[in-house]
Amino acid sequence: MVATVAGKFLQAFWKDEGGQDLIEYTLLMAFVALASAALFASSGSSVSKIWSTTNTTLSTAAVKAAS
Image (cartoon, rainbow, N blue to C red; front, side, top):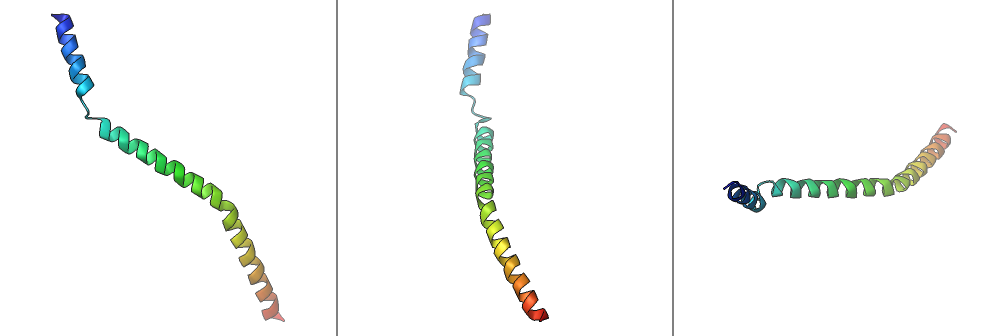
């Protein structure tokens, strides 16, 4: 009797897909976070180059405007 009840419980538990959506959305969110982190890490040098160029151009313009 106990084995039958336990067997039915395990079968019902195995077939239950209630938490599957939560796991899928969590994995999707983790993938998006990792992809975003990789994108930001790789774009850091590009932003640095743009900032340097802009800083140099503004400094040159400020010197020319003052003279």
